[in-house]
Length: 365
Ligand SMILES: [Zn+2]
Picture 1 (cartoon, helix red, strand yellow):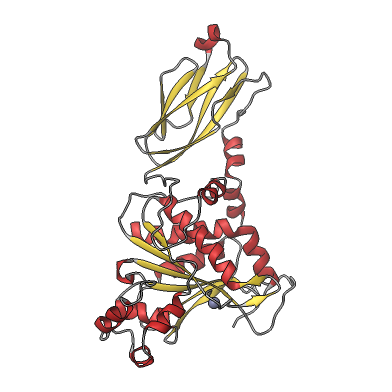
Picture 2 (tube, rainbow, N blue to C red):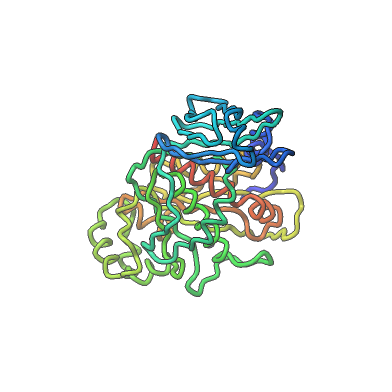
């Protein structure tokens, strides 16, 4: 295991996190002017080809004709229906624009984000068990400032598996239990994947531990003879079908299992050094593009890249390799390192978004 690493604040990360403030600087104007006039909404997210109404409030009816509307980028967001109190904004292509309403000396603005993928509906599907509630979605939606890749629906499926659980807490430190962190981070990645509109994302039932389900379903003879070369695929599939807690893994274009790492020498308190994010893949796996992107992009946002490692020992990785399914085990951060856990707690939504972006980028690209 490597140690050390500079704590580097990436300027880019800061810019992206403060996107609304940046937009305000790029497109000066006010959400609410001193005279009390304001827009019916200050931000809009639209799919390409979709429209929404935008209005200016607290302007006397006889002066509505004096309201001037403008889009900072008419190729991204067009406006129609002005002059007047209300206009229609239409998303034309992916990008960000500002729509201004000017009245006298006052200007109000609404930021418009246009994406080319389907918007995720707030109704959740229970495919494999717990997938969160409306409240979770509402809480997640607040963080619209994190950049999201939106793309056309590919029809491809992604499975997020939260490591440990079912009586196995995983790594434990004064920061808490691994099983709870994997369940939190897995859910954040799920929401980010669904928001992309590009893939169908499922969350493995968080009541269960996929490793334990696999281990108890496959005989020790079969477990030890699987090499990842596909020779025992039929036998593995028919064994797994006996367990209703294991979905058909071959339906998935990508499976990401979430874990948190632990090291022998613990620095529970912060000492200014990260251990970082990494991944394990099966030794026979060819393409590690997704894991490389996840680790690299999160590394470039101020965290440390721990590394990507091949192993023949991880059961779930070996079984997926045998089935021909693209799988990786993500070691999100070191649960027993104070610097890592401080970074995770402050940046988990960004980390989840970057993880989802890497998956979408690969599957939709
Ligand atoms: Zn683990």
